Length: 175
Image 1 (cartoon, rainbow, N blue to C red):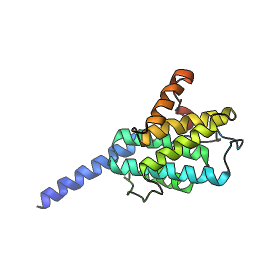
Image 2: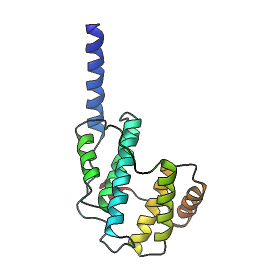
Image 3: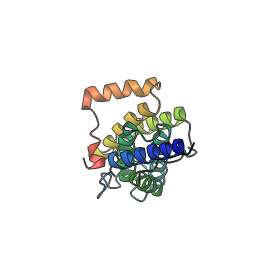
Image 4: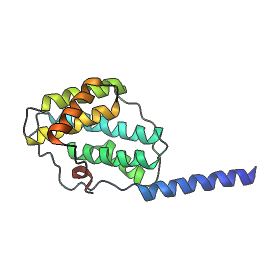
């Protein structure tokens, strides 16, 4: 029994070490969004917090596997560009840097509702400035990630890709 527990502990430590090597914090120095968005600051902060919670829950569900860490890095970078003082995103980034798999957090919205909210906001922003258009593209893509069954969002994403190409998420991560 003692050997079994030692082996389990060793496996947990190895997986934490592997996770710590795979996750890199997004490099956020100056926000891509300078404040000229068609969104209130309070709305940006709330959206950024919910995106960070979604990212953390995705890592928790996936038990910290590399794919979920790459998505979390992208979403945390995006979240920090949207609201640079986002405490939820900063705390999750620190946890992931320390090699911890975060616990699941209660999300404010279910996946279907959150996807619809992201899609609706993305559509609203399409008619705005260049920054609004970038944010719109990100929100529509994120909407399909949250709920791939959201047919309107999937259709909008395909149209967006045809017209403008894919979102370059390295803008938010630094690499």
